Image 1 (cartoon, one colour):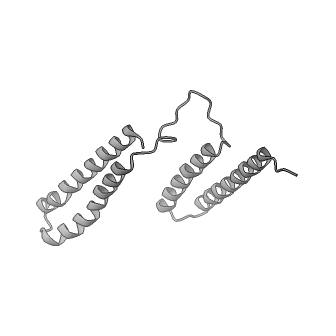
Image 2: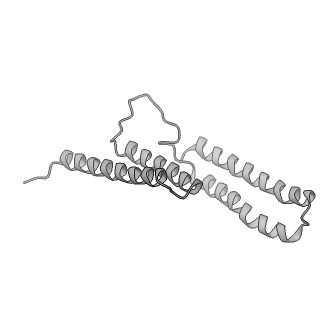
Image 3: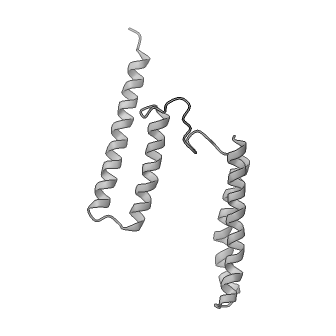
Length: 135
């Protein structure tokens, strides 16, 4: 007896929907009844976005033809993504090193933060380039 693929697909979609609703419900409950404060809000927001992406990709939430949701179907270029991540991680290398080398003054803060701003701008430029090229 052959297996009907549409039945399997509907079963998988139902399973993903139940899992997403269960996880989202547990996160909302935890947040409502004394969660970890601001850190839990970040986890709840990120989990909500990932679950929404999963629901759209699996087809549980159908997107009508002609409607384009930003960042849902646009994958950045890998080389530009790696460069963006490298510049972002450079902040976590530069800041601790610079804190040991500069005095604790407003000028020292400028010396530390100016390269951090440049690293963030470079990461955003590479991320933008990667999204515009696609990959």
